[in-house]
Length: 421
Ligand SMILES: *Cc1c(COP(=O)(O)O)cnc(C)c1O
Image (cartoon, rainbow, N blue to C red; front, top):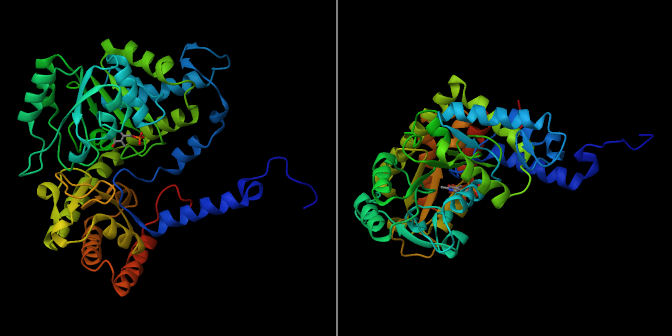
């Protein structure tokens, strides 16, 4: 070429990084991605995420900004808000949180002072770090009380929640989880919160797509505040959002900005709007229900092959398998599965006797596979592969054979967003 291009594409500007991104694109095509928090965002979502909106600063909210030049951005953010409001039927929405954790932190800032009592599900039972776990800022700056699950059936013990709430009188009560395979009873939590004067906050980070698609009950109308990520079952960009009753709108908005953050990530705001538009299509409800149907088939297939599941099965998008009866640590199984082309994460199980960094379980989810179009027939095969590897995690021939079968299925189910169509 005679001259250097004015605006070279990534492959020319930084071939090393372009190659890494391409390698990851291939990995996402060739493997069965079963980490329940992961998914495939559509090409449209990825385009908005990588757009020129990245270049704009917009501290404040539509109509009340601290920088000029918001003619377009105000419309973008209002559109995102209106679409999310319509999806959930909620009074107020803030789409500026940088991710799920900052969204939750903003809720603490809106309702608590340092040292106040807060209550959430403990991490070992399936709760999230940001619900007051000790190593998180939410456990260090607040006096946090954790509820768990019952020893016998591994389900949330509402009697324990009520007892602890009455004793400790938390300012906020979290309902939501990151590794809990069952439906959450928002009405029961709302009753407990009302009795003790707590603000009920539902964290639907994992299940917001299921809620929109009516494959899990909605907390809207029962929880005064609802937080979510936007990149899990919702299938949007990395981001967070807070939904709330009108009476909390100003407290939530002030907590996000100027309380916690500076300028919103406008390209992500646009991509949230795109994801909300996609979630408003009739196909989205079918996707949400298929995610659950796939998880149920996966769970049945694993149980049939002798695996022990926390709570015995699932109502949602994820399955938590306790491998201790098999005598295989979660990490050993997860590593062998990855080599066979099935990507999961090792995870603690309730009352785990092993350490969090070397726990007894693996956590599996169906959202990404469902987005690729896989259904019950594929889930039965996946269950067979997982059980096979768990039974022979050190058998190279088994791993090799499984990798071939996995690659074959992946080749027939191209994922959105990878530019393979
Ligand atoms: C994933 C998750 C979060 C945090 O989201 P990040 O975007 O990773 O910060 C918060 N709460 C729950 C229940 C989650 O599963």
